[in-house]
Amino acid sequence: MSKSSVYVTRMIPQQTIDTLRERYDVEVNPHDRALTKEELLQAVRRRDAVISLLTDKIDGEVLDAAGPQCKIIANYAVGFNNFDLDAATARGVIMTNTPGVLDDATATHAWALLLATARRISESERYVRAGRWHGWAPMAFIGQDVDNTTLGVAGLGRIGSKFARKAAAFDMNIIYTDAKPNAEFERQYNARFVDKTTLLRESDYLSLHLPLLPETHHYIGAAELSAMKPTAVLINAARGPLVDEKALVAALKQNVIWGAGLDVFEDEPVLAPGLAELDNVVIVPHIASATTQTRLAMGKIVTDNVIRVLSGEAPLNCINLQVLK
Ligand code: DGY
Image (cartoon, rainbow, N blue to C red; front, side, top):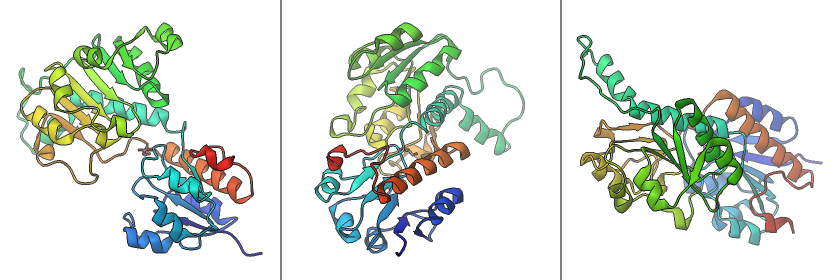
């Protein structure tokens, strides 16, 4: 019997590819870049399984190009706003993601952004590297305190709650919004469930941990930024379109808020005009889950899901559950 064919849309850890190769014919995108739509349509043809990235839009056209034998599209990411779930369900294709294994890495990275923004780490490092530092100065690179301030968390899911828990190290007051209050979390971490207006008004640091859905698109826009404290810092390591990036650039320029730390952008890899010129923003290229251990763990999940589905079993991380009925 011929081996099943698996396509991987971009190089992921070699260990993951090797494990897949023990069972399947595996082909990997040879380029060090995302595939164009045309290339993707070609590459997925006649595959039994595809391992995709958040940069690959998997819609009906791609699923049709893959063909009726394609059983699973496994996203190498926890976010799946690149998937058309209805199109996959209609065609009987299982879609999976990688939840759980990247919560700590992503939450820790949001903290790295928060601390770097509050203490002007990127800006002052650029200054030193440029040879502009001529000795200690009492008024240079004055930042914002983190300890004993108020941390706002929008979305207390797996990543948001990991992020919020780490605030204990800084004796912060935690306020949060979510679909509903989490009494156990509140008791354990002395957190307070608030509405969005209170979250915006009271947060010294506001970190977004929401999925990207039509109702969360531009969750933070000009009006929300104006409702925040002029000393506030906005952190986004979730999805770029949660923030109206043009409005954020304007707010940062006019000091409507004090700073922002961004891992994700509205139209990656393109940045809103003016963003990269601002000193009061820390910008990094969507690397929240980029640790050796986490990326291997993500590889293990996609591999397990592909193996299960190609062996006729249900996957562990199906997103379009209706397809299994
Ligand atoms: C995800 O998994 O959704 C991240 O954005 C990339 O790891």
